[in-house]
Image 1 (cartoon, rainbow over the protein chains, first blue to last red):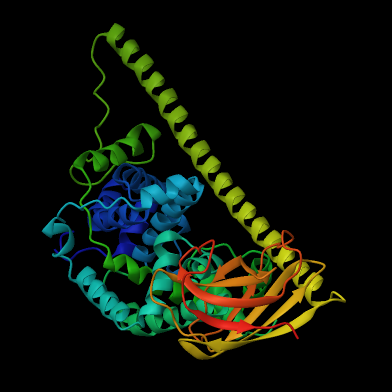
Image 2: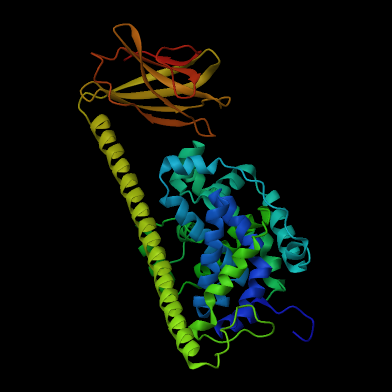
Length: 194
Length: 271
């Protein structure tokens, strides 16, 4: 870009839709580290997380035209695509293998400062999200983490935490409501073409 | 269909990508009816759930991954050229001698065939994974439905049996304020315990129900109380015992023990 300003995510998606591979590469450079971190956190396996990362960017290449800005930001779209593929893989594992892999704790590589810290919009989003999560009551946070990272249903969370199903449903709903209200400023003012 | 708190709850389930089960049809019909509130909530809940991704440390991918992705897009698909510096290796320029030109064309055709096979394989693998995922979700849903049905059947058999007895259990030892009732059917050899005012237990502990038969305690299952101190517990089939004389609840190591070792918190006598 001649202006020196970073292109918005939406502009990059429009270029990808027009079969511009460089735009896909820019999106990759912007978000691959975050998506790989998420995939690795869910799968507990770097190799599988890398496969998911490839699937996601090939999906973006093929299906950029299906991105609908009314349904959320590009980052949200990419995170949903990554998480759903990773959770699908977790669900297809046998229970024993699933339990075994979940216990694997890998030390992530140090993130490249250029990837993470140079992006003020990403920093703003991270700060806001972490602050919003820190303000959640612990039981709501636990219920949402089990749903988000392990793909557990309400029933499974109830069994795992020995909590009545109704209580789990309430915790998930209230937790998401609070997060939604607290990250609204980013949705309204996000700079990456959200 | 009017907007309701329950539909908002379904929006949270959908936003988290967990199976909606039977309620899915109702929720999607509600969205098709044009509920702008649920449509917006779904978007906002998805963004809210993604906040957890911010807690995860970013992990820099190996450079080969980027190269692999960009190479697999390939100008050979005829999908346009990248702008700026080439990110994807370009096709070699046609050589002058006609023999080499033919070999390059044959090679290119072979590469195209291989590329389409690989793409198709990726698509098929993705479809297979999606089918496996759907099958797993349906199997889980069926299991849940079977368990619910079995539970309801048990309740009907115990609570509506003509020999059901209600036994009152009073608090003892460390929990004098605890209270419970056991609905016991001698025919079904099963009981349902409804307890209240139970104290929270330290990690690694659980409540264990005992049924006394011929003067001896027989283990009848372990259970947890909810944060409000309530518990609803259905005993397993206890047909091994001749007749239930009494019931008690003790605090035991999680998972239960064959004979009571911990303090008695509830005990009763048949009326």
